[in-house]
Length: 139
Image (cartoon, rainbow, N blue to C red; front, side, top):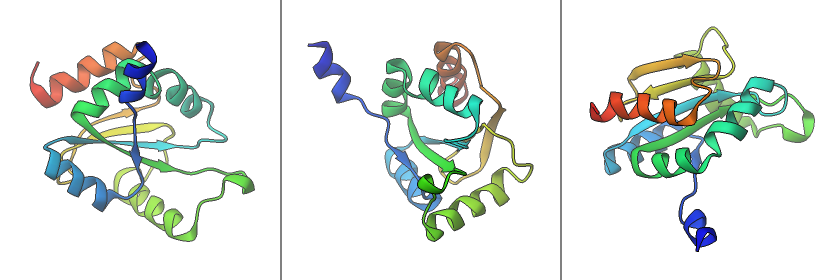
């Protein structure tokens, strides 16, 4: 039974801001934008493994967020398409001009920043979920 429940929740990360904004508007959700260096940034890798992959976060994100990832890998085998690199560069120019990694930003459905976290937002996934929930639902 637990396996079935775990499969029912999955965190799908968008890679295009305009698609994320349309989905957020349609579903009345906020956007959580994460800047990562998936193959070179230790804290980014830890954030993905310990927080973004946790069952609690995935369940919360499924119901409350549109997830958007701007990845900047360095290894040749992980190289992005030119189009995706351009989209990520545009996101960085707009939301992360200082080049912080990891950086996570909560955006409203129009793409306006509401809250940002530089580094790992919270060591405790429940603390991060609670903080986001308080911002978007006032609870």
